Amino acid sequence: MLESLPTPCLLVEADRMQNNLDTMASHLDQHEVALRPHLKTCKNIEIARSMLDPRSGGATVSTLAEADYFFEHGIKDLLYAVGIAPGKLSGVADRIAKGMQLTLVLDHPATARAVANAAEQFDCPFRLLLEIDCDGMRAGFKPDSDGLLEAAGILANAGCKVAGVMVHAGGSYLCRDPDGIRDMAARERASAVLAAERLRAAGHELEMVSIGSTPTALLGDNFEGITEVRAGVHVFQDLVMAGLGVCRTDDIALSVLCEVIGHRPHAGQLVVDAGWMALSRDRGRAPAGPDLGYGLVRDLNNGDLGELIVQGANQEHGLIGHRSGQPVDFKRFPIGTRVRILPNHACATAGQHAGYWLLKDHNREPEYLERCAGW
Image 1: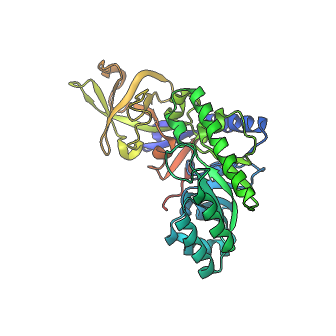
Image 2: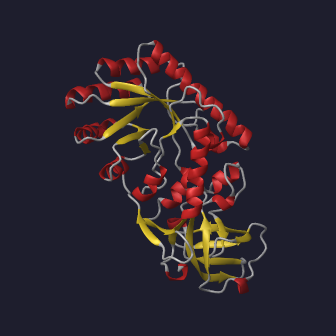
Image 3: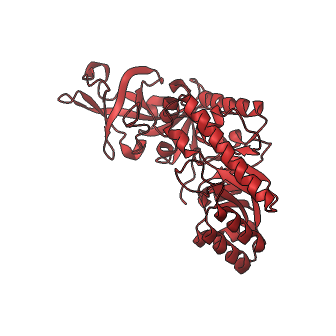
């Protein structure tokens, strides 16, 4: 079956994917906390439906195009988990008027004033979460900042709903071991709870205290005070997650199928028809390690080939070699040999493709699933 698919293309192993979803669900069930899955990784309605948690009933997206796609397929409760750009508020108001239950995010009083003005202009009481910064990695109010309460007051005075707070521990991707991730999960939770307590003391009735990243969701051991967890990479897993100890390499459900198109005897490398346009330029945990180049190479059945990695990537050419520097045995990989590349970052690699080939079992033809795209 895989011999006839066009290359390069994206493969998803259904069994591994389901095991990943079951692992997340089991862990969060133990802690009695709901999952609001982040759909930016899968961007496909069939897969998204398998990720939804009836306890939250909603999902997370990273673009308004994703929000439109999933709303059209019946998912109405959507958290747009990127700080809202004021220029998007007119379009957001239109979506809300059509029935989309869209929650926005912001992290600055100036943005709150822009939302307040738009609420009056468009007669739309926007619903928002205030983003909290727990690790200094990206965006958010510090949980003890005056700006947090100032922004909440601006929104409330304009008739907008301050629904809660959200935190994303992006620093968890830089941890060196599971213990470090558990410490980051504790910091993520504490920041969210502190911010929520301050907002409630100021008179705001919060419904949502939302935290999440795949590492902290899977390794966190205390979710007291949290109403929901957000995670998305867990659906496929990737080499970053395996390098962090969050999953095993054999848990990774996503791979890029490609074909050997050349040999480089002077460099001891194979040339394949998957470059950075198929794999992305994401280098994963390099240089912190392990450095797996642009992806780990597996055989056609997803079996281990040792330390073969994609050492270099041009637009449409990938250069495969041994991590050790030893030359590849070209007799094992004649021209036309097909191999699979496990991705460093599932979101980035999947984002290069228009869809997946879903592999349900070895005796059935793969099913093609389209992905949504755009912003």
